[in-house]
Image (cartoon, rainbow, N blue to C red; front, side, top):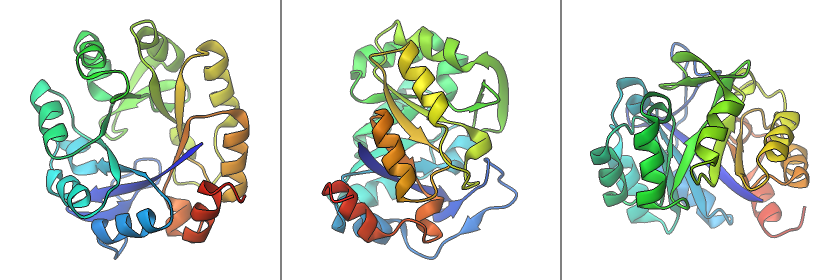
Length: 242
């Protein structure tokens, strides 16, 4: 299982939210590049860069952070936040993103998102399928929908989707443990899907549990920032020592 730390950006700084609540961000002092370097030094190969300004505004804003991380590390960056047009996709790749995780377009323009899976390749485009009580939410989780999570994944699974990031929003930032049963249900229904699990990770034992059920990767943030998962833990996990 791949470990993917999440670096969440608001106004150029690292911030964390609980359940997508923009009114109560928690800011951290590390610069995005310095933090990315720390992760790289301890065996991490991919970081999940979340442009929360872009998610809220509807177009990417923090391209300069993406460019800086790519320019000063050898990390691959999975970029997300505000990607809504062909131009947004092209620009994100031009600034150095290796992968894009996209949610809003998949709700508002299914044909366009499905075309990106084909034109850019299913290895590079990940569906962001974040849900609250089984219903999809987009735009930094500010916009709720009536779209069923399983129906949403299924539509794109039938059109070649390989990777899906799934967050149970009720668990995000709440340190309540990952949604293991949800991920197992998704894998059972869509046996060829590769899940990037996100939300609820508290400690290394949660990482082990996610690895045991067979998710492709785990995206985590708050557990690291609150000291529950340490850099040494990441190194040991990636080396197979835990």
